[in-house]
Structure formats: structure tokens, C-alpha cells
Length: 469
Ligand code: CO
Image (cartoon, rainbow, N blue to C red):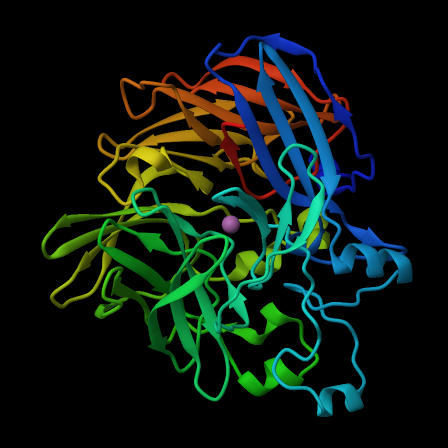
């Protein structure tokens, strides 16, 4: 039987641009600007299926709130993969879980990452000064026009940094107006690198040698530190990655005989100030982090006991096999002067695609986190939105039958009176009506204010942000 959420993994070839969509209910008059989101819009090239959710061809979506109306547009990113894979009906570039077939001759003459990576920047978007960029886990980023969603080209950095992977989850320092990100350099010596970035330039902050690097999707930041959670999901062999037949992610292996650890780096000096072991775990997303006192950091993560989730996110598995796990809301306490990191679970509900009031609270003590989740006991895909009060350990839920929400993006009210004074914007697949809508929730009460009806479905995406444009 076809699963109710299957449409979320079906391509959306139709690029539209509408000035006004029907609204049920209402949204606050102060909400002016655009939610821009990224995610896959196409799951096959010719007759070749794209096997993993993370490799679908990138499509941008824009909801613009202005003068009481909401417009919508969607457009594919014009990547090398989008052109050549569609032209040839096969996969031509290296992605997350895809790799083009190469001849022995090509491999023999190749150096690291011989297959050219796809600039299929499907994971996230961000703004650096006036540039809007789409990102994936290769360091390549693609510039786009936030009004038309038109692809403008690759963002070329004028620096000497080079690495094989990065995260699509840079942090942002609002005081210094710079981004901060992580890269992995694989070579004779493997290195984790942390760096600042603007739209023009990247500057290295820290280099941490690592024997067997782990797969790292995001990292944590406090006002003083950057925190890498170094999972027990590690690169087996550099040589296999370079010359083997396996796609990128299949070169990593879960090994829970080894501890995981937290690497704590001073943001300003680049010094590695602590390496703190903890029991083996895995995660994609950090939620928030802050310094509790001189000796203690708090690191909140959507965490897993192992890395099985990566295999559960192959599209075939999502549609036919076991339902995917969803992370546990863990609060790790990191002793900076020795000892192991321990965790407590802050909610009975699962959490993924977590968001907070980032502008006000990232890196600082905070009270509320939001995320997508699967109803306890249900055999299903992400089917609810949660809000967690991390101080009082209380959870609120929004859920509607047949509806599949994505990441909830928090937009603060102007002159907000509290941390949760604002709205959550959530793209939801309505499996009964076979289309999507944009849900507007009051973030304080978690009740619906309104919904904006999209005339077609939006495939399940990853990340996005709201901009006052
Ligand atoms: Co992510």
C-alpha cells in the first residue's frame, strides 16, 4: 500500500510564480517579508531514480508576505547536476549518497574526490550581506536572487582554504556580522577546520587534526566557544573514499566501541580548550548551546543512539521499509575541566529539524525550542510540530490528521515581549487534499492563526529562513 506521505517524495516539475494565494484565517499585520526554503524538487533523472532524500535536485520556494497578501514561487537551482543529469538521464556528479560510475582509468589518475561534486545545493540557504546563497555539504555555494529565485552562479571565494566537505548550517555572529562554519579537509592529514565567512572571504579560526573524521552536519556555538560533536560514525578509509566505488556517505562506519566526544574551541583564539568524551551517539542537528558557568557548557542536540537514520532516509526505505527514527531531545552537560559529558532527555516527544529564536537566543541561555516530530506510537513520517520549554520541561504539540509538517521557522514579533512572542511558519503536506499549505502558528500558544493554500504539493524539504525582504 502506498504510504499517505509518499507525495512528499514525489517530484514537483511545475515552477510557478503567483502574487496571491488563498488564505484561511489570518496572519499578523507585522508579518512582512519572505520565507525562503530549500529542498529536493526532483527525485529521478530520466528513468534513473535518485536514491537518497539528500540528493534530490534542489528547488527553492518563496512565500512573500506583503500588505495582507501572500505570494508564492518555486524554482529549481540551475546546478551542474540539474542540467547534465536531466540531459543524460543518469547521475554525473558526486553527491551525498550517489556517485557516478567511473572507469578504472579515471580512478587511477584521480586525486581526492575525483568525481566532480554536484553543486546541487539542496540543504539550506543563508544571507551574507547582500548575497543570498544556497548550500549543501560540499563547500560550493550557489548565489540566487531572493525575489525571482533565479540562480546567479557559484560564489567564488578569494582565499586559499580548501576542503572536501562543509556544513550547510553556518552560525551567524550578529555583532561582528560574520558567518562561522566548519569544513573537513581530507588528505595525508585529516583536519577539522573552523572559519569565519562573509560573502567575499573565508578566514580560518582553528585547525584540529583528526585521525578518523566523523560525518558532521552541524555544530554548536556559544558566545565564547564553537562546539563540534565528534560522533562515533567515522571515515573508514581515505583511500576507499578517493578510489573506491562507494558514494560519499557509505565510506563512514558506525563504531560504538569508540566514544563520541565534544571538541570545544575558543571562537576568538582558535584554541582547542577541551576534548570531552561521551557515550557513542550520532546527530544531524544541534539545537542550541550556552555556557552555564565557568566550568560547564550546555549543548542541546537532536540525538540518536546510532547512525541507522542515514540508511532509513533512502527514498525506497522511506516508502517501503521501517519508519525512520526521530531524534531524542538531549541536553549534554560538558565539564570543561575534565570528566565525561552526560545527558538528560528534555522531552518525551521526538524532535528533528529543530529551531529556536535564533536572533535573540542562539549561544545563550534560552527557554524554547521548536521542531518536527513523529507522534508517539504512530507508524508514520514527521506528523507533528512540537514546542519544548527546556526550563520547565513541558511540551506542546500541533498535529492534524493526514498532515506532514516540515521544519518550523520562528519569526519574532517586532518589539517582542518574550522569547516566544512571534509566529512559526511551517510548510505542511496535506495528504488528503494532495497539496501543501503554509501553516502560521502562534509560537506562544501553538495554535493556528491561519494557513496559505498552495495549488500544488511541495516535496519534503530541509531548511529555510525568513528575511525582511
Ligand atoms: Co540540516
